Image (cartoon, rainbow, N blue to C red; front, side, top):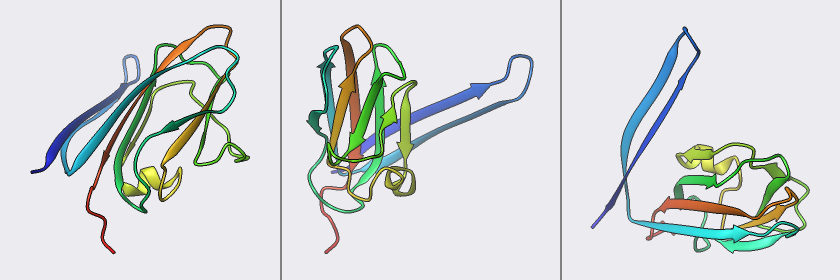
Length: 131
């Protein structure tokens, strides 16, 4: 039985153009994670899905507050690529998720904002990888 996830995005310029999209995608599984990333935390490891290339079809990351000092790395705490969570992140499709990594399984969060922040993640994925 498949799972259905609907995503809705919209952006509008004041008194100007608007773009919007609403789609439902069929997936085999989803994982929802919510953690508190305490102020002063460095490289808090969060497992977001099982290992497997190309499984993730949707990854959404939101937070109770956004700040350039709330960051994450993908799959390794020694990664030199540090991504600021200064707004909600939504990756739809294997191409978009693949911008992070072809098999994102862990995120490592750091917080030096001066306050604890709750981070929520939703991963929509295949559960039966093709060998």
